[in-house]
Length: 138
Image (cartoon, rainbow, N blue to C red):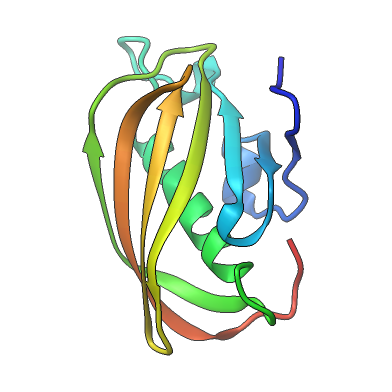
């Protein structure tokens, strides 16, 4: 079951299609992404693989950055680091929220917090290199 207020993420990429379905609530800097952990997301011990969590964080950070401006900002991940404070398992609802520190002309800095079942499991910190603007909508 998907929590109230979430809808399918309409702007897809091959990687989002591979890990999805991914859901969204809100827009711009207030964008929240959600993902129901499935078996395909888990490692041999039954936990959601760190790479899936890193991917969700990178997508949330990038989309929130891009669509927090008009026109949308084009940027590429220059640095991404994660601190794991917990774990998620199959069936958990993962939710990613973003907190921007600074959006400059050349660099952007932000944090992403991912929770599983309401408990924070990851803090991701990222630096993005701003490359221009996008012409597509979320």
